[in-house]
Length: 271
Length: 346
Image (cartoon, rainbow over all chains, first blue to last red; front, side, top):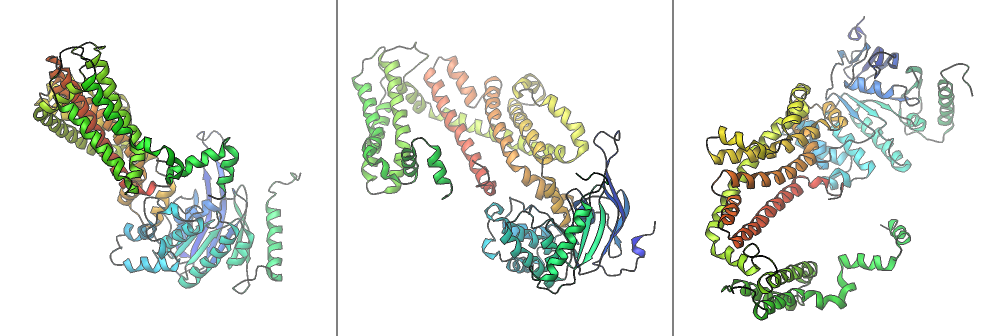
């Protein structure tokens, strides 16, 4: 196999997915064939790009993100960040889940510090903690425990916690999925602001087509069982984007059509 | 709050009463009329106790002790003093409203106890002395009782500390490392449920002295529940916490000590409470059988001399001693698990 390292992408913050297949072992130990979560997926994301993945549930988008984070290994194929193959989790690839997953036993401040403490850098980078708490507007809650926070606040802490390591890439798995519509729109702008100020490469999974169009440079549309990339749609709209503009709505229609097509994997099964 | 209130009203058959009770829990105005009676419960009970003591009949030989009436008099005076001072202190009033019923009934129970034993002789002597007999035993034998309590405390704390320390090590090891789990869990499941007291014959042979054997038995009694719950707490750590920590750059030490152990702490405390209960039991039995000091030994010794006043006196001290330690452990838990407040019902 040709190593992805040989590719022309030289920027350290680019991501490459190279013919990746992921098969989950069947629970009965191989009597029935395992589930094919991803089937020959290839994708490359440039440094500083904001790319979203949309698709029906079970299309393997979360699995792809976990593999990029290094938490799961592919059955075949390779993944790389810059020129380095991805084999294990690293602070260079931050991951934000739908559930903020804050440590309930730590205050907001200590939660944000986790990355620095884990890497033994708290002493030299203590000032960063204040900076990031200001950045997400949570100075007043520094000493609160996570269960006192609203969903949006908790997710902001989770973003600050991931960003304090200055990751080259930020992977977001439906980060705004659990929020109400208003908080969600505010948080979309917040994530965009963080992306623009830090220039971090971002790859995020979402169910929400409007969110994908509003935020991303490109939209990856995936199909279900097995997970495959159906289409990659570039979004050539100027930011900030108007959710009700003609171009926005036209793009939305295109994507819905593609997804509808993608939602019927088996021919002759049209009910 | 605004949302749940109407729901409660609809669900409760007598909404106004429920609301009144609810309000009175925080602010007193609802119970103003019953207040004088409540606040005088303690002195009234003490007065009844004194009346029974001085005016009641004597079934057997009268005990020439003044400790009991003195105690009742002190309670009477304090009760009246409190009833008077609460007018000026709302804080004292709230406390008294909370405590007076239970304290009053406790004093009354002592009076009934004296009536049944000393006055009417309904229970066989010398097995059931009256409160004045127990009280005088407590006062007369205070030096030996203090010494016994002190020895029990040392044995208990020594054994508990050693057992907990070992249990945390074994529990974390079994909970985290699959190999340790494979080999350790069966041993734990087979050896653990044996009551620590069943090891007494072996402990007496192996240990260099009775004190060592008692400390070892208490440690064993604590070790099993704490190990079991620590191991299960560690292995039940939410996988997403560990995933998050790993993507933030955490190594194995961070994952064990800063993620898995804090996540397991609520479980570990359940083990510590269970272990405390079994360690009390083991301590008393070990003292009765081997060690020649401590409250367990004192009870057996007093019983040998048929001094049942002393037996009950030691039991009273044990109750105070054990419940104090239990309360302290609750305090420690409240401090350590303060982050759980509001998450779960305590």
